Image: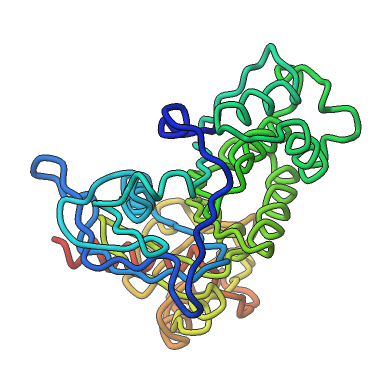
Length: 329
C-alpha cells in the first residue's frame, strides 16, 4: 500500500500548513549522505518552488532517490541543511511526514480486495474523517467510476493498479507527492495517461517530485534535475536544457553495407558523442558540425544523404555522463 510507516503510527488529516508568498517549498544546501566510505549524495544544493512537477533523472545508483528522501525529511543527511515548507528537515522531520504522499516503484496493494476497499483501508490508516466522501472523490478523480471501483484489484491491468496506488498516495490530500520510478514496467499508453494525471495534480497546487528513466516523461516536467555519482549536474527547465546544449545530431543514410569491423571503428571515433545504427542509416551525435562533416568524410563511399536532426535529452545526459567519467579517472 502506498502509505508511509509514519502514517501507520499516527493518523493525519489534511495538512493545514501554508507557505508565505514567495517562500520556496524546499531549500537545501550542501546535503551529503554517506554510507560507510561511499558518498551517495555529494553537497547537493537546490531550491524547489511550490506547485512544480519536478523530474529527477540519473542512472541506477546515482543518488536521485536518496536526494529526494533527504529533501523531504525521510532520510537524515550526514551533513548539510535544508527546510521543507519552513520546517527543518532534520529536527522537524515528524512535522513534514504528514504533508507527503509517497508511491514506491513496487507499489503493494491488497489484490484480493476491491478498489474501493483498498481506498477505504488507506483512508482509515491516514485518519480521514469523512471516509466515504473522500473515497467517492478519489474514484471520480482517478476515473474508477465506470464500475472499476467494485473490481477486485488482482484482476486490474498494470496501468490501473498503478493509478490506484497513486490514488492511495493522494488519499490524505498531501502537499507534496513523491514518486519513485512509478511507470517502470507499464505500457506506453498507460504511462501517458498516468502523466496526464500527474500534470493535473501539479496544476491543482500539489508539488510532485518524481524519479524516472524515461526522457519523454522528463520533457513533461516543469523542471528537471540530473544527478550522477551523487552530484547535481543539471537543474533547469527541460526546454532550457535542450536550448543550452552545443551538441549536434545527424541521420546518415547508407548507400552500401559497411562491414561490422569497420562499423565498430567508426562508432569509436573520438569526434562522436553517440553512435547507433537505425535500419539502413546511422544516427550520430557530435560536439560540432565540423565533427559531423569530418566523420562523414571518414565514412566515405557508403555515405548517402546527411540530414540534421534534433538532439534529445538522452543525448545531453549521455554526454554529461561521459564527461563526468573522464573527469573521475
